[in-house]
Image 1 (cartoon, helix red, strand yellow):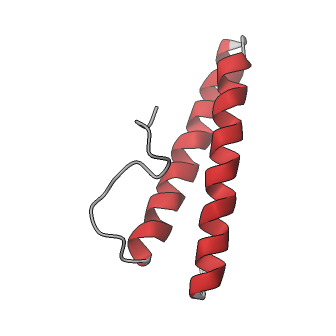
Image 2 (image 1 turned 180 degrees about the horizontal axis):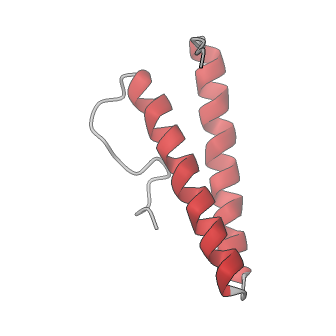
Image 3 (image 1 turned 90 degrees about the horizontal axis):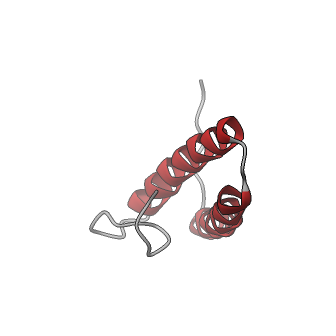
Length: 73
C-alpha cells in the first residue's frame, strides 16, 4: 500500500472534519436504541479517534490526549 504525505493545511482540515464527524457520531450513538447498530457506531468511532490521534501526533502536538477534549468512549 502506498502512502502520501499531507500538507499542514490538508492535515488540519482533515482533523477538523474528523472532529466534527465524531461529534455528530456521538449524538447518533446516544440516540440509537438498536444494540448491534450502536456497537457498530462505537467501532467506527474508535477507528476515527485512532486516525485523529495519528494526525495530531504527526503534527507534533505533544502529549497524547483525547482529540475532542472529552474522555473517549
